Image (cartoon, rainbow, N blue to C red; front, side, top):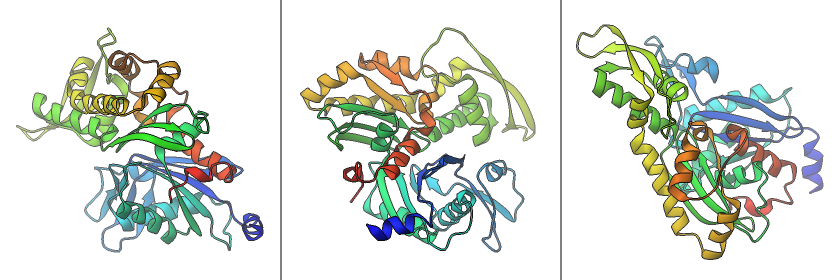
Length: 341
């Protein structure tokens, strides 16, 4: 304990929400210091990192042959070990105020459905990127702590965390997950569904970033009454030349129907598996929705209609998980029970 306290003076312990779409970093005593896309641009010949984060995301789909822009995480877990290590190292160096001779302790939020192999990949990547010790916590628990839910009480708290690669649904009581459902459906699947719809309907090929913009600007999970339109550009699959067309919000809603239905079905399954006493608590308290997917307009109305339960959208759903990991970092003794063994 004394050694840890002593070492704390010479290093900045950090916590990371290592997401499929975005990585957020919290530094002890400084708060959230980084929020950037989980993208790295590499030189193909040497494997050297050219850019990470926002700069690298701007290169997606636009790089010459010798440069490749990669998202090293897929469906919430590491798919490319070496690139994930490089990405973490660059981000860690970016947030450290000065080069310190003692490496930081790192806490990382991971999906609740993660396998032992995937856990090892996260730990090894963080260690190789410069971590002295690596701790893991599940995303729904971190999100619950981040939004201030009383997870230490013998009462049910239900959290839905919709990220880029996964949707995590958990009922939490007494520091533990009582029941959970983790599906590999999130914002990326919504983008993919839009790409396939545009291809099938308009014979137009669009990229991931265009699909994401469509989802953000006119995408809805529920009919909100007002029809919106957006001009989109891509490559005509018949003539092979650039083309412009217009897509409506009702079409985008139809395109995203399958992945949204999968999320709703997962919520139902989690509720069915919840013990009766905790289910009664959820009726009173409602369900908390966090993660970037919570920003999809009309999602709260759809979930309310499908579950007949109060749905609470948090003020800043993107930061809930990393704020939770930050609280654990600030009060390790209070939250020791939530760490993954």
